[in-house]
Amino acid sequence: MAGNFKLDRGPILERLGGDEEIFSMMVEMFLQDVENNCASLGNALNGGSLPALQREAHTIKGLLATFSDDEGAAEAHGVEQQAKKGDAGGLPEKVAFLQARMREVAEVLRQL
Image (cartoon, rainbow, N blue to C red; front, side):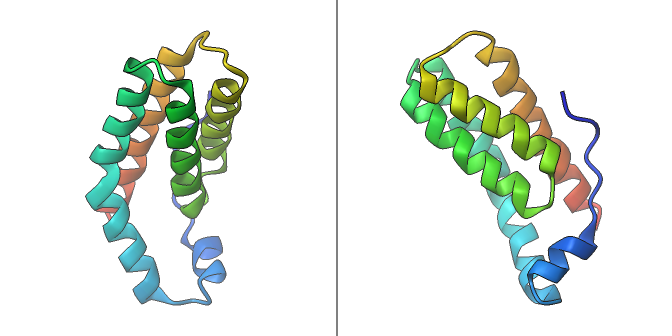
């Protein structure tokens, strides 16, 4: 499993051409949607739809990568690929981890 999330603004701002305004908008959007994203991930798992879980994990992967959370994004990628293969083994724990990771990132972003 991944270590604790630490925000490194440098690489993010570099990708954004140094645009602090875009960075602030991205943070706000993440914070507004974090609970909906966590719920969608859980609903896909609880509904037993591996294709839906694959899509939700893909979304989470992108969101975490946006904030340079390479470890969290790798975990989401693993869930995405596992769901794509139709393998449900261990997914409840992995989904719970991703939900916790999203909330952890949100908490760090709230402290900016």
